[in-house]
Image (cartoon, rainbow, N blue to C red; front, side, top):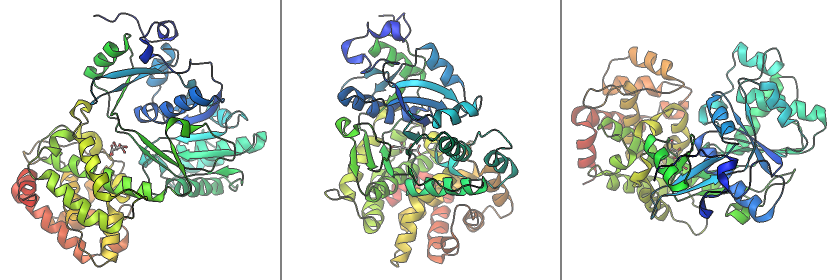
Length: 481
Ligand code: CS2
């Protein structure tokens, strides 16, 4: 059946019952400003919030702000702010339109509009999914000018700091800033970032702003043309910007919301007084394994995460990492075991329908690895242990950063520190020792204790040598025996 009409308000009523949005865009008044209109937000927090509003009401519509690209804003406007989520890898494709976006904005094009939105008394939560690298408070003049008001506030720290100042000037009341990115201690971290940004602006953190920590989890890869076609079929309407996701979804939030919050528990969100065990488990078990698959698989010439997991020896290596290194250093939440959690993670990564590309997970390694892998290594070393598997994964990242797969094909280095990486590599011999020294010397990534740790170094150099001589496929096959 050819799908002829485009998703939008006119088409929404005619969608199959299961595909209709739970709320109509425009029906729910805004209560949340969200920075980062990427696929992850639209498949995760937006879905939970729509379900919570549908179940319990409340003015918690989301004003979605795209930080840089305005294309997504234009596409969503053309569809009356509706988009669909295509869930794949369950029994059958399922698509549903989501109607919780109650406004749209574009930070690069209209930064002052974003400040005004944050200063609106109707807004009680500012949430963010801007990826790990956006949380850097670069000390350069441009950042400083954005914070002091001499330049338009286009970066995340400037939007938040100046948004809070505008809010205070407007007497708009208490606010919660909710970081939904994969950073260890994401609540305290964003609090510290905003406090430093305000300091540069000559101000202090207001005391009616809370920064609860959260753990977010749902695999949301880049949407492909095939996903778009399948979304249209399952939805019965064409959607220019569907997002694709796995069936699994989880959100754990520290319950500190001075301005109130949606009834998220009605939508399955876990509210708790301490997110740390969830956050640490997710970063160190799920995300670390994801990165390991991405680097080792890309070196071996595989395209998808599911292909990397199929490499002979791979699941054994990952299970041993989880049992011998993660389980030794992480205290999971009550009722959860690291190995049980890890087994679920491996099943989720085997979802081939997602078509999650190794290259996508591999990007921004310098920003991701400190949260995913270096904490495990540090804890193992503090216990006098040996980071064997973690050392292998670090060596795989180093080989990936060098820019060549085992076949000699080029690999893209998409990382905010790519310039620093290239300089560091060029200054050292292209040997296991040279590459290890070059990259552990990146002080933005490796704390001095790890950079100078001989045991870690020995492991990384040893694995790097194996990868260099035999390639990733043979190294993993042998290691997983
Ligand atoms: C992935 C994550 O791209 C990546 O680095 O590891 O985006 C991962 O899919 C999510 O954290 C799952 O919740």
